[in-house]
Length: 138
Image 1: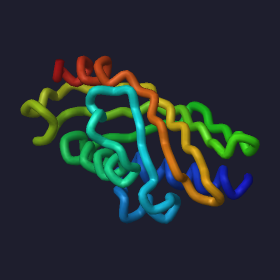
Image 2: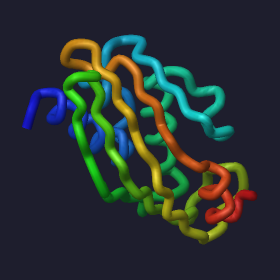
Image 3: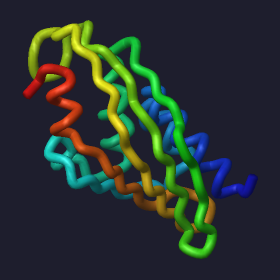
């Protein structure tokens, strides 16, 4: 396992288990940027903001979990890519509506771009509309 692979995998796990920026920042450059073509994340532009947004998911879906389906590193392009499936059930307060009791199974991809030994930018590929329908939010 290369250092880039190790860092990317540790970041992926910390982010997906809701540990927030206080844990994730050790794997990222200060001011690391974030992008996604998803309406639910349109106002999130930093990796700090995204990791804290992910931590917030655990308030309304305390059973949240993820599984990695694929993980790869492209050393030539300084990029690591992780494909996962997020699982969770809206059973607690939080989110745009009261608890629905409905579950989500969301496919997503993280493309983590490195500068040196840390993540400098991440793009999330995710169909938020599909996830929101599953949760009963749309």
